[in-house]
Image 1 (cartoon, one colour):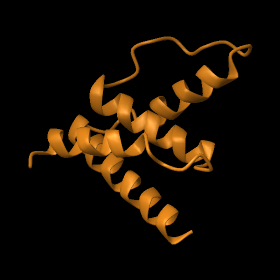
Image 2 (image 1 turned 90 degrees about the vertical axis):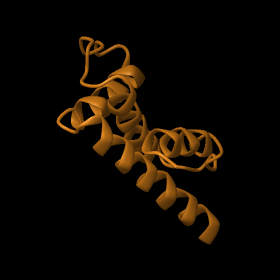
Image 3 (image 1 turned 60 degrees about the vertical axis):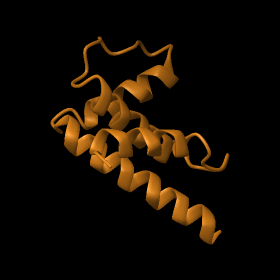
Image 4 (image 1 turned 180 degrees about the horizontal axis):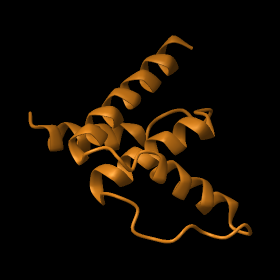
Length: 89
């Protein structure tokens, strides 16, 4: 299986993570997903009155230096970690 296929498979698995997955982990996944699929941040930072979108933008900006392949690999690893954590709980 190629990296892109494995990434897409784990993107589907991420949708089934437990509700109690922390916002911090969700933001990490969001940032890695955007970096893997879009590349570097291509929008301006949302304003103070939009904290949710601002946090998502910050998470994406935090991984801006990663290549798309690195972001895909990190995303897959993070989904696996979260699934294992959920299974152990």
